[in-house]
Image (cartoon, rainbow, N blue to C red; front, side, top):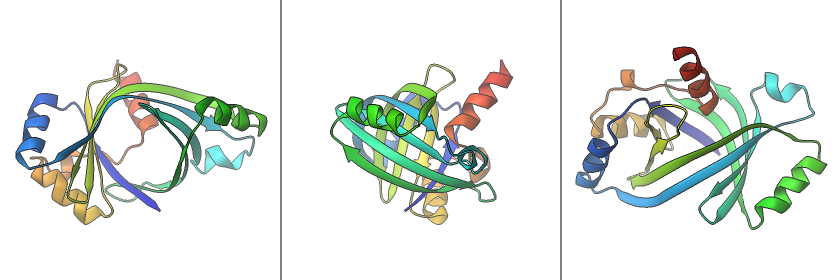
Length: 172
């Protein structure tokens, strides 16, 4: 499965929520999301920008693989395979025993909406200003959703989470 998404930085959260509600978007999640990204003992993983992530979203747990990112697209495009698991701590222990080690830990507050085929997430991570993420099955759908939300594609970034971390680290 392909993950296709863009980010819009430094948004006005209240204005976006009003806009989403006026468009009939359905709120599908609100709460804390925490994750651990792992590095592999395979040296090719980092050079190929692959990652394994264990994520907690309220009372649900997910293990996800993300493949190489296509940086040539207007959106961030990468292979993504994710499964729901029933025990976060046991999976963490399994990954450690398989030779994976923690690369990065994140914790943020998220509000997620569904609008048509798009998933829109308002992300509040204390490391940087609130941002918006738009994920859809195609670039065309992302462009449509971005426009509906009152933005242009030139307002978007095709970045991953670590790109945000680097950007705001250098901005300080």
